[in-house]
Image 1 (spheres, chains in turn yellow, red):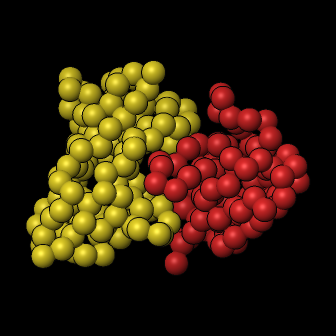
Image 2 (cartoon, rainbow over the protein chains, first blue to last red; image 1 turned 180 degrees about the vertical axis):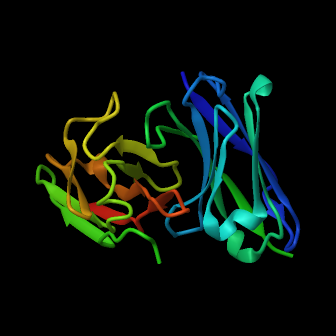
Image 3 (cartoon, one colour; image 1 turned 90 degrees about the horizontal axis):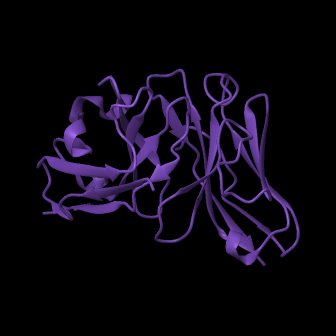
Length: 120
Length: 111
């Protein structure tokens, strides 16, 4: 059974750096073609894709947030980490990690999400 | 403003069929067969319903179907059931440096 679970702080202050961890099971990010993405959803708003990391460590970022995002993986721990610098109240959202299986172009399994509020 | 355009809401009675549209451009929906649809109930994570325009993942009811014509993709739900009431989002791979774009979401109400 494939599962993903996000973890991180529920509250961060403006200008701080957010670090989120996605811990997964049921698949390996060293499997050829496997990818994990981060997606966020502000309260009452639409989904927004943020970043992706591939099995071969290739990384992709949303153009609008590229300067603030870093994605990395620890294959031995089955974890993907996303950092976002210079947090702002507009970054308040539920952050999801999701798997993209090999040869797919869709997010087939999602974590339950973690709500992050940016406030002083 | 989302990159893909969806109607804000649709509704239907139990047993009826409804269609949700998702309009993009030749750089996303029209350029690739990489359109996917997600169902999201309140307070829950999105669930993949359709991938690659018209494919259903294992376990998804065959009442859900997808199609595409030009720059517009569509999700059709037949035999509406109360449990189908949710928000639905389309997504597409894009040739822009954004890589993936989502629609603004459509709230489905089962009357």
